[in-house]
Length: 514
Image (cartoon, rainbow, N blue to C red; front, top):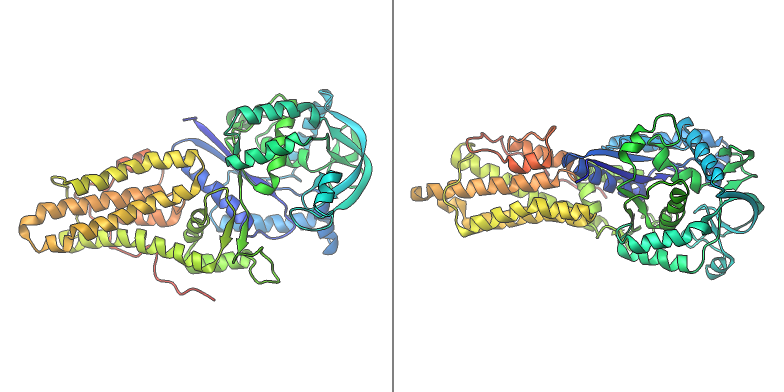
């Protein structure tokens, strides 16, 4: 395993408050970051905001404020919410920060020096929402509307600097074809290759009619537009192009860029081409997750099914933050589209409560009822004990494999399945009957010990997903997680003779709000 792990979210447009889509990407990335920290890897987790571009200008104008004022206001909302939901990012990059702007200008200088930027002119269709130029063929096919937002495309014509994207397309295509893990899930890889084969033009990278942006160092009348500015954040945050590139040298290339599928093309075609031009290694994986709907329909404030900041806070207040984290990962295979329903959320919460919470509570209660709270040592094992303990032993390696594949649904399911098997084990061994027979005292000790070992492993496996609830549950087993690695935690279940804490429900009964 590498000693370092570098993970990023996209940088988000701060033209509105964070919503479910932002929370999903960021929480998924946080789970991955927490897992890799727990393995002992030095982890760097980056998120941030993309504050330039026409959308910010138009949104600010509609509110009769300057773009910078809008950015500051909305960035505060993102920062506050990430803190509120315990996101463990190591840095937050803003494209309006001097460190980013000066590094982007240095990147442009290097691209110019490589003769990969030239002055030309552009006339054609533009998708303002996606910050993307659209070919005439694509515009006609979509009836001159954005394929993402449905809003009308705009006609755009002016002098522009271009990046020689076509020069690098054969190399990009060859890289994608020879590195199957670069684009995940696999179906997304096929989409990108198919689009490449339809033909790719050079990339317009500047605007002269827009002044809200980073001036080109060799022609300040133009500002760097969108993708060179935005994509560069992944290396400018590490100090690339500055006087101190120590972080860059330690963490680049990124292990994974976690993104929404709508920006896959830019991250797997534009970004690799830029990196090839800069003679830099490519990120190891770009993982594009799916989109959320709500109640089977596209989210809309007018339909009343929009999962906004207010709704997310209501859910957290009712069910807990960790219950939200679990639901988001459990809802569908990571990479697929997802659908939010309140009923599914309640089922997900009840799974945590009735399977994990109940297993922990039953185990500790039995130890208190039958052994005065002192965890006994296991005696001779029977096949039913060995089978459950073997399943627990497999949990760590199975989770390591699932996290390596970024199969976050499996990462959520596997520990809960162990708790489910442990509940079945309790039902099958019937400790309450063993208690009534003094000759079965040693057998009862083995059952209690096996239950404690199994729920301990379940909770350790859930730590990246349920950082608060799993730690609370482990504390009831007298296991302190602070500063511990997964290897240590898996290998150190509560020892025989440990006085367990009083059982307290980790997931108490709740009354759902309407």
